[in-house]
Image (cartoon, rainbow, N blue to C red; front, side, top):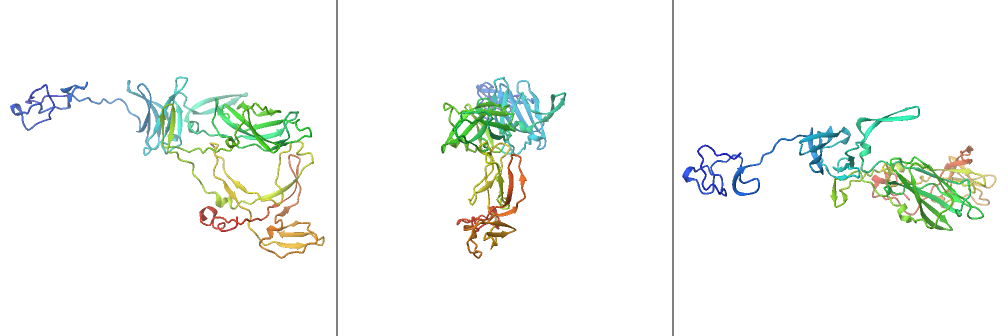
Amino acid sequence: MAKNNAGSTFKNQSLFNSSLVTDATGPFLPESSWSYARNAINNSVKGDLGTLSTEPSNLFCTQAPYVIIGSIFIEADKWVIFSTNNFNSEIGMFEETNCTYSVIVNSPCLNFNSDYLIIGISKPSDDCSFTIYWDDGYNLSRFLNLSKVPWIQNCVTLNDCTTCTDTTVLDCDAIRLDPLLNTPKVTLTKGTGVGQLYNGTYQVQIAYMLGNQKVSDWLIPSNYLTLFSHSNSNAAIEVNLENLDTRYDYFQVAMIAVINEKSVQTLMGTYSIRETKISYDYIDNALDPVPLADLTIMTPVPDKTTAIYKTGSYAVRVGPINKFDFNYQPLANQIETFWQSVEYKNTYYKNGGTNIGYMRDEVYSFFIRWIYDTGDKSSSYHIPGRADTNFALTQDNNASLTINELAPCPFTLNDIETPAYTPRVFEVYNTAYVSSLAPVQLSDGGTVIAEGKMGYWESTERYDDLKPEIWNADIPGRPD
């Protein structure tokens, strides 16, 4: 408190606008100054000037268990506090009026670090609870409903009744801002009944929804299904769905139909996530169209951002940090491609067969990429064709020309003179070869009658020799 030291004297005590003076005392003390004043300020706590008063002090209220690295205001006098010792991490609630601190969750999987400060926001919900969103540029972006902490559960099934109880272990996957996502398997088959779908090729894509909001891209499309009948419109389609993610509420279905060489994309409807089979026998022209470009959009999902701020009614994530862009190309270079020739009955495609192959003597480009557990996709990595080798061209007694490499590949090129080997033999002959002629029966009624390795082919373009770390030492400079 402001205190007069023994023997101190004040001059003109209504004014204290000079300074502390200890060199002069008594009658020699200058106007508007003082000689001793411990913990004093020359204004009142209300802001009145010319008044000597005690400086406001701090009172110890409460403390968090570890070093505090961030806070988020909730409402009134409530704050969420983040603290860590770089091993244990805790989220707690601080109430300023009562000077109380309570633990919300303490878990090592939060993985806070004292070198990365937390910045986030809070949002009230309709049920009067609050949800916090935060980022630190070190961990994945996260959120947490303060009234519904997601604990890992122990579930026991007895007499077809499953009972689940919460543990004290936090489910850190459940608080990811970009949630995990199961990629569904969508398969089209020809319907058993009649319908009004026109002759053409059909495909389906789905997208997950939370409430009325679509929250995912359009996911991997289904197989192609070709419908044909002489009447042009007496078929139906069944959509079979597996591995749907029940953490979502609904899903939308988009139908891509190629009819008379024209592609039409239609939003067929919204369905409960519990549906496993949908039948379509008609496409209503009044249904909303879906732009083809929307079906191919791939939205990158960043692993984390450096901070989350509130701007009006929006939350803004800044400083996105994308997933690690690994280089799989050297391994993709080692992938080998093979072909199979499958024999089906002549009614296979008429009855809705979906095992569609490739045309012979054509060039197809293959690639490999990964689908992340958040639904987005990695970069695509080209699968090169096989390397060229010396082919020995021979002619048997039946005047058929063959290419010998590991196993013969027969041709029916009569009355042709056997040419000498040339490096560009692929421009004239099919360099694919047979590795097995043993028949193999398939579950869909087909029979594999032959299989082997695909042919060699090259273009006039060459692989980029300026980036050997991508293409590996064996690829750069070679023809594409």
